[in-house]
Image (cartoon, rainbow, N blue to C red; front, side, top):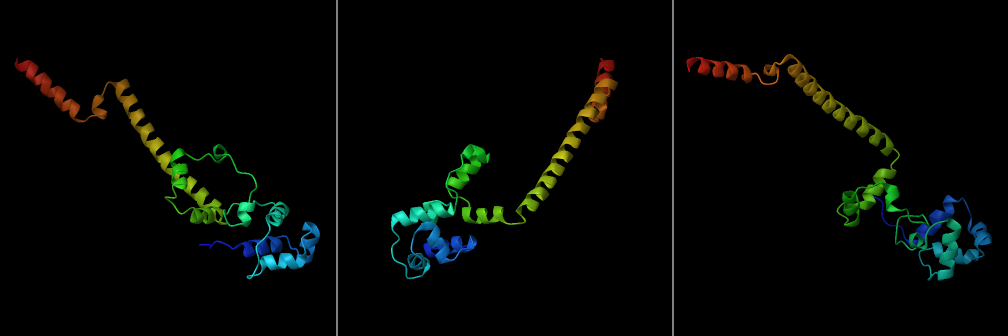
Length: 171
């Protein structure tokens, strides 16, 4: 499982992802390259809030992401309704009854879509078997109604009917 990145690591990773040198980043942000380098080093000094904001805007991430408050890089929050999660799923996530970092890693894994497709096929197969089973019961019931042979559905019904006839003939 991933460990939480420090501010220094996040800043360096973002710059490297863009394929930029400190000098190129300095030209874009108007923050001196030496200052940017100190932000990425292990012995960095406090970063002024205006520089945090400038870097967040440049990298198109939230300041919360830069500061390590969230793993979500997006600037805008997504409406929960757009995620199509059930109330039970939201409660599990909110109450941290499951490891959300592990869940994030799992769903972003390159093979996750294949796993989901396999699960859909499996679940659809189970559903298909249940539907076939229910259709068989309905078809059998329909045949029994049409033929008037409830013995198809209930084998002991014939015995009970014969027993009732015998009692009636004795009376």
